[in-house]
Amino acid sequence: MVLLNRNHFSESVVRKTISSGSPLEAPIGFSRACRIGHHIAVSGTAPIKDGQTVFYNDVYQQTKYCLALSIAAIEEAGGSLSGVIRTRVMLTDITKWQEAAKAHGELFAELKPACTFVEVSGFIDKEWLVETEVDCIVNEQNE
Image (cartoon, rainbow, N blue to C red; front, side, top):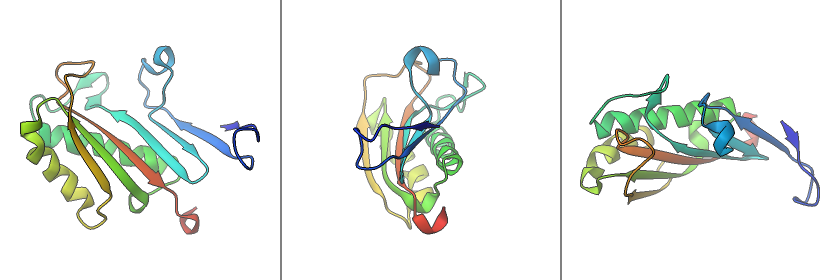
């Protein structure tokens, strides 16, 4: 954790980063998630386990997996699923959006966060069909 300078914020706040364990974190300079105050931002999350792509050629399962990783990072940062306010689902083939939407809906049907689906030209690994990003606000009552 890092205490941020008051010049950047109206009051001193703590910055907490959550590691994905990826060897790319250091050279790129990123974390799985970052919390400042009550806000948690989860980085683009790919379908990777132990350095390998999971659920090859399955948009639905890759999306479920990415969202599960994101929620785990949110929980590690002190948040919860109920605090999720925005999601982004990036696909290499937008014609598969309904498969990703099914996975998203299974998790967020009741909560209904703001959500965006976009098509991208590709990811770092060609086996990744999807990446997700998630934003969360921590409810003070749950801290």
